[in-house]
Image 1 (cartoon, one colour):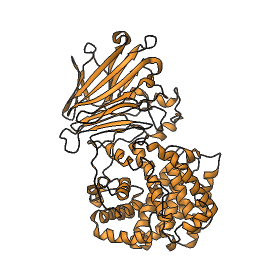
Image 2: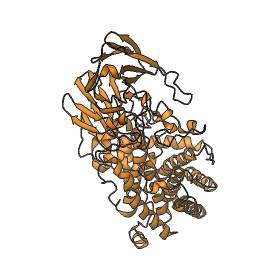
Image 3: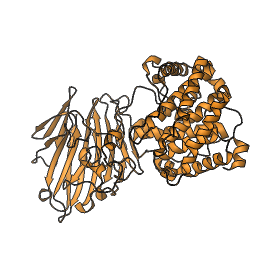
Image 4: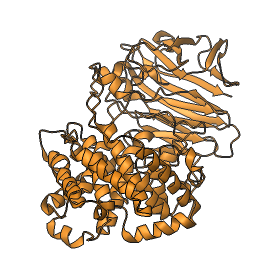
Length: 588
């Protein structure tokens, strides 16, 4: 990618970011003739009407972030510019012009937190690309000048926040995507800067894409899949529309497979398998990122038709990429539909395993377990942890994520990940807030990686996670095996070998929000009129204990109503030397 290539291959006419003239004409036809496309567009129109009632954006920074403002700008420009392209409403055009002038008047777009710059750059670039021919020339010139001065040039400040350039997390995907948009929108003004920026992105993006390998697991969890992947598909779409190729981005190994990971993390209850810094539940809105995968592959399994056909007024505020997403939605042509597996393993930096009962399962069986380590991006000390659902109830829970700003404003160091770093004092981040093993009441070893060492599918799938490194020298060996031994039960079998000089106590623990009654055989959990037995098969002579986590241990901890930790605390002298087993069965 150099100036010569840029000038030769970049589409001359606009729009050229995701939308083209041909795609726009086709979209107008699809809005009239394809019910889900027309319905989604009506929801976009309703969103546009609501935007017109809002005041213009101001540069209001919250803590270290201007991100809320940048995201709102991206949402507004995608919605308003799409509606203007379909209806040519002068009121909409005037509002786009006013919004652009407002953000161009900001002192900066907060380059100290470059996600803010990236999303704002994409918003401004998209607007002038889609409707620039109708805007005043001075507005377009101001936008291009600000895209260069407040977007592109700060990304070359080596003293600035530019670790994302060759980083491996969502920042890479988001920031490169925003810079590519800005580069294309300003190619006629500064082709050297434009080509250099796109070249840098094509070199840098693979550092993030490799994290999907080998099976499509996004290490940062399902919510961050939605974030990072949305910008990767925006980038692929922008490059294709602007250059006629995405330079292989969409075909990067395991990237397309990640769509199945996304779907598999949607549990029957409506909750995510919410490992890492993941949100709890998905909304009712259709997954517009999956719509890109549907269009790219022809797989109808990624096309959430029923959700796109909801009454437009019920959809509420749409995704901030709903405008571009409508283009993908309109291009979908089904050629196949793949069923999700009932048992699945995904390796990588944060490996997971999932057992499902399937869509026809009357018990709504769902299990998710994981290995990994605390060093992964947005990771927790949760190796060996699991969530379990049956009968529409999530019995074993993951405490999920909590507000970054609420923690950061106190001076809390949330992001450092050394063994003794402050992050691990939080219940949501440490092993004490997850359904796993703990040894000597100590933290997991942050750089001890736990792989999935064995996996078998079939009617009674099993998966084994090697937790040995997780405990350092506190144990000599630890392997946790999950087995779906019936349509309504899960067995967790821990085979361990103590270190006589180090091991003092091994604690089996499970997090739940259910009511718990201790019994002679273990415990009975009750929730939403359902019951689950926790059967202590290996050590019935030791009684479970219940630790209330509502309120949580620390003032900064996330408060979850009814949260508690069920513990089976086994002293090392009871376990004895040699290979020992802790076996617990959860049965509906």
